[in-house]
Amino acid sequence: MLTFYDLFRERFRNLDESEKILKQINERLDKSTETVNPEILYPIYYILNTDPCYYWNDSIRKNTLSNLENLNINNSNTIVINNDILNHFFIGYNSYIELSKVIQDLSPINYSNVIKNRMYRIPTYVSIVEGCLTNLLRVIILILDQTTEKDLSAQKKLKPICDALVSKGFEEIIKYIDVDIRNAINHGGILFKEDGKRIEFNYTKGGKVLSKELLDYEFDKLIDNVFDTASGLLLALCQFINNNINLINIDKYENNYVSSNLLCMELSIPSIICKCINESIDSSQLNVHIHIKNTDRDFILQSSLLIAVQVFKRYPNYERYMISFDNERMLTSWARYKRSDLDDILTQKVNIEDVADKLIKSNEIMIWNSSEEDLDLEEIKYYRYPTYKCETFFIKDIKDASLEDRKRLKAHLFIGDADKREDILNIIYQSIEWLKEVKNIASPKFKIKHGDMEAESLYINVYRHDSRKNKELFNNNENFVCFIDYNKNNKTTLDNGGLPVKIWNKYYHEKIKN
Image 1: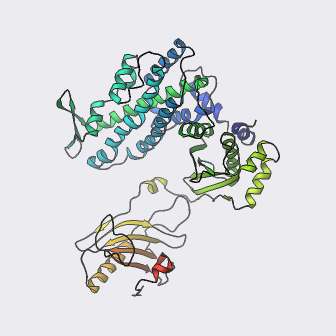
Image 2: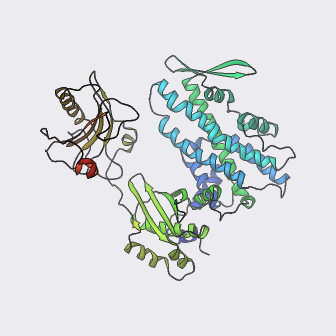
Image 3: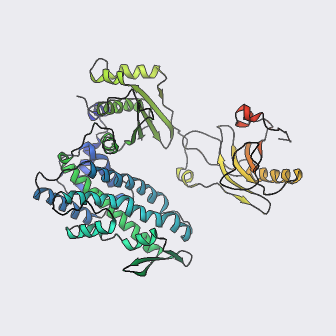
C-alpha cells in the first residue's frame, strides 16, 4: 500500500525531511535515536528550530524522559498511550504552538508597561500554565496512574497535579510553575505600581491574604522560564512517544479529536504543515487545512493529491475531500477530490497524473499565484491604522479596501448630536480631508496601491454614537446618519453603494461635489 511519504519522496527527493531532523536530534539531544516516526516528526522539528521553542530547558527534558523510560522498563506491558492520554497531549501541544507565536509576536513590542501587562504578560503566563502545561502534566499523571494502585487520574487541578508529580520524582518539571501567581491572576488580585513597572500579585493561602511583587523584567523572565519548561516537557514527551510508538492504542480510523490530530501530525513535515482536519456540516465532505511554504502551482497540485490519498486511506467514507492551502504570500487555494477518484488511485485503476489532469479541467480547483512584491512583512504585521478625535466628532475602525490601481479606505465616523445639515456637512468635509491622507500599507497576498499618496476613494459610515449595537446600515436605525461614497475623480467604483439593490433603493441619495 502506498503511503504519503512514499509518494512524496518519489516526486520530491530533495525534501527528505525526516533524515535532516534525525540528524538534528542526534547532534543536539541524545545521540542514540535511530528513527523519527511520522507521527512525531513535525513537533520535534518545530521545537528544535523555532524561536522561542529552541530555548527549551534541557534538564527538564532529560529528567522527564529518563523517568518515563524507567517507568516503562519497570512496568513492562503495563503502560498504554490511550485516547485519554493523547487527548491531553494534543490540547497541550496545540496550545503550545499558538503560544509560541504569541510570544514571538508580542514579547518584543514596546507598549507601555500597563498595556503590555494586560495584553501580553498576564494572559500569556496563565495560558502557558493552564492551557499548555496542565494538560501536558496530565499526560504524565495518566501514565503514572497505570503503574500504581493509587488513583492518580483524579488529580485534574494544577496544585494537586504538581504535588503528585513531586511525590513520584518529577519535581524538576514544576520548578518554575508559580501556582500562587496563577491564583492571583485568576482571582483578580493584580495591582500595577509605578505605571506598570512593578506588579503586585495578591492571593489567598491558608485563610490569609498574601502577596508577591515582580518587576516587569522579572515577570518576563518567569514567562520565559515557564515556557522553556513547557518546551522541555513537550520535547521529552515527543521523544518518549517516538521511542515507544508501539504503546499507542487507539482507533485511528474513527474521526474524532485524537485520531484527526494524530493524522495531522503524520501528514506534517516542515515544508507542509497540516493545521486541522474537520468535516462539513452535512458530513459529506472532509476538509484538510494545510500551511505550505512552497507556493509553486504544480507543487501545490501534486501535494494536494498526495495528501488527499493519505487522508482517504484513513477516512474512506466521505463523498469529497477538500484540501486547502494557505501561505503568507498567497490567497487561500484549494483542490477538491471525489471519493471514486481516490479509490481508483489506490486500486491502481488510474494513475495519479490522470486524476490531476481531470482536476485541472474541472471546477474543483483554485490555486492562486503568490505575490512576488518586495514588501516589509514586519511593517504589515504590526501596522495599526490611526484614529482621530476632536470636540465635535471622531473617526475609528479604518480599514483598507484598495485595488491594484486605486487607493480606497473605509471608516466609521461618529458625529454625536449634530443635527443641522450645515454642521453635519462641515464634519464630513473635515473627515474626508483627514482620512484621505492616512497611509495604507501593502497586502502580502496580492498587489494593491499603497503608501502616503492621497486616497482616490473613501467609504464612510456615519453614526451618531459609538455603541456595540446600532451599526446596521438600515434606514430604520436611528443611530445611522448616512453613507459617504467619496471619489476624487467623481466616479464611484461601487454598484448601489456596495449594498443589495433592494436596500439601496430605499435610501434618499444626494450628490454633493465628489
